[in-house]
Image (cartoon, rainbow, N blue to C red; front, side, top):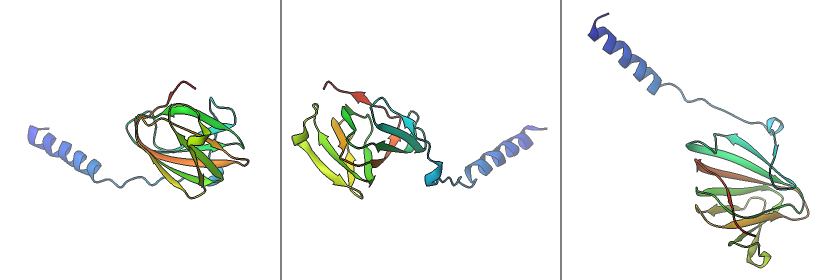
Length: 143
């Protein structure tokens, strides 16, 4: 194979890869696999993407009644939507219920990167969906 043929073969592979159709993915409600978290009564799942890697991800957190997550931060901005139930979100480095606001199903909250916050469920189960761009993580703060 001469250099010219090799160049055009490589170029056609690149063009084909660049113009390939995006992959459509879907997760049906019955397909969600919840995993335990370090917080009692709280389970997590990643619906799409990878929070540890670069790029867009979608995750969900399920809260049993009265479960909570203490003050923490994330390195990325998150768009959070309460899918079901209701949650209380508070902002600050200490768990102070007087600094919290009630968010019912359908509410959307934008939490900027590195913003200390905490949350808890009321007397019924709640599900929170978060969308962000990784790599992400969670840093717990002193209580």
